[in-house]
Amino acid sequence: MYELAPIRKLSEVDYARADTFGDRACSLSRLMARGYHVPKGIVISTKVFKRYLNTAPGTKRIDQLIEQVSPATINETAQEIQDLINFSPVPMQMANQIANAITSLLENSPSQALIVRTSANVEGSSRHVCSGRGVHFNMNDISQIIRVVKNCWASAYTADVLKDLINVGLAPDSVWVAVIVEKMVQANISGIMYIEKGNKEEKIHIEANWGAQVHHSEDGIFPDHVIIDPSETKIGEPIETFNAYKGKIFQISPENHQLEIIENDPAKRNVLSLDQAKISTLAQLAKKIHDDFEVGYMIEFVFDETDTLWLLDAVPLSVHKNLHKIGQSSVVKTT
Image (cartoon, rainbow, N blue to C red; front, side):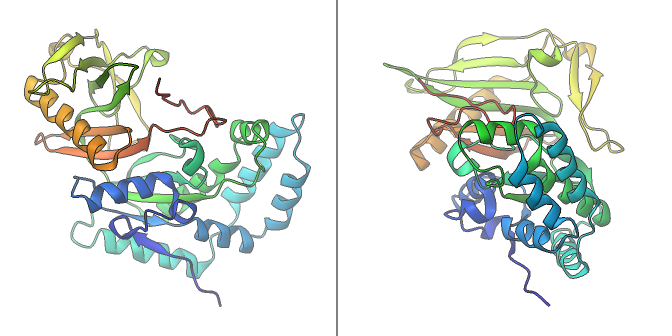
């Protein structure tokens, strides 16, 4: 018998322990503690990941593969490690405790859709290790969620993550992944915002779009882009606005756990996704978060169908000087 490492409510995470809960979970917990509107969730800590690796049938083989990994074999090694994680069963006691934590999260709304995503320990220094990987939407089947949790764990060993870790001198097994299971917000408008610091001025950037997430030119989809001067007495009046032609958007159907491209409503294609009231609200929120925490954050937000504003992610813009990219994750660098 073994004692399972913590599975905590997101609101109860010790946000000084990024090694245990990952940087994303710690950032969201800090926001919740200060009263910001973040969906409820649980965090399956990095210690659960370590316990799983210590009990999975393929553990010894994973250790051997990590010790032998080289640039020439990195793709094959990564695939084999991921397969060993994904196809090894979760011990019954561990699975039951994860299931009980999810059931407790859904106690008053058993049909609520959930989102499952990673929160990596190394993000504490690089801010972006494994970010954007292993994100699954519209989850509500517990056995399926447990399988997805393993997929999130396996994301620590993708070829690009291993390659980048080796390139910056970190051990290939230095990434430990916590997993966030959070109540999903159905988005009417979604976006990101951040404060750009220049030599003499600051600007608030807000990028938003109709639909589930903001995506950029690699997908042929461009968000609206609003730039604001936060030094104004009345924050919120844009100094620049770029309204993109939005022929397509990303959405998440109830039957699909991944994002899918659909045609936008023709009536909304050339309509700015954010009205002046929302722009002002977001600008003031960005400034407040910056003042509260004395550090810049890249904030991911959504407005739901009732126009309620939710914060879904918060990534500090301070970046370890030697780690600008891990696993094809983009990093916003302040100037």
